[in-house]
Length: 537
Image (cartoon, rainbow, N blue to C red; front, top):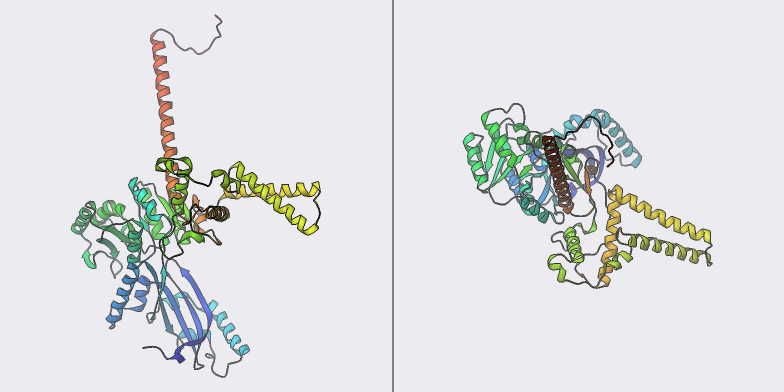
């Protein structure tokens, strides 16, 4: 039934808030509310991961199992649709111990309606909250009331599916390491092309918290060696997806799990994991360290948030992604725009490679460089020329006279200095370099649109490209709104490794030839002595 209007809060004051904790996977606050009828109440509001909040809303002996089943079904429905869901809960603590600590004289009443008196109540309560209230007093309560879900769409970065398919074609193992709920993680992994098939073999921790159990298509199976052998056989037939929860990974990698079953799963099945869902930052770190130290894998970790920093610092190579690109997603609500693929096709067309050698364009490369786009000498001169012309025009508008030689040289020096700063910013990388590239992309789009060459190229308005926390721990930062840079990094690394191996082979062959020549000379009686004498013939 629809709530009565008088039950809606008329005004809310925040007394104390506790920020999101990645280990607890929740955040909370204490708020004072004034209802429509003028009465005051003290509420505790909590939001967090749907898995964690399940334990807050429902107990094992809860008689209302119908609501629990609705909760489970709703999480799965939202996850299959690709939504990240955050559960929201509240509890009225007006008559609790917390309320007595924050408001020793009692909550405000109808007579305390003046702003000065009310603000005094709130100021005193906030002072008490800093000293007396701990987040566990709110978040560990078992009387939370479910209010609903906050759902967030999870659009995928441009070119993700294409890049992942190319990585898999090159025999790279791809694994999704995320803190999202299992159903959402599987839906996103399937959308990205990481997983195929409808049989997820999910290893999770039992409700008791000390045992492991398998879940296959909603049916639970005991954690036995026979079950592990059957699952491994199904994996070899490509008849399923291996999924681990973050809690299961940390329990499996703990020192307590040394039995035969755990060792088999740890050595045979866990390295083939395609999705690790519901992982905390520490669990991501443990899994990645285990892959590198025990499995001798070379791991590239790609992330964008503070929850990925620990794993990125441990990884062999780490790549950070920026956010805030206008063209990161399409305007019509469809798939994101693969700008990396568009640039690749442009390069192939320019170099006349493959089938693109028969294609022609009315826009010469010199037109792009002449507009100041790119890093060539022509583009640099064009940018300096535009800045000098703009500076002269500004002087002409303000002074209505021709500038002298000193002013002209000052304008030229300023333009050259800005060009040098641009070069340094691009070399340094980060959000500054990404904004420069995005601005050039917008200028290029306007030129192409004016010449009617590619009307399907999306237009940009403004960018607010920001550097995330992951950039602090990463080896590389992607400056474009796509992940094709990961592919470029791997290609460059493979090329460098191939060149190094080739160089060492040439050095080894040269050493073998030198050894053969010396042995031949030694056989004929010619030997190297301790001293070298100059002989003139």
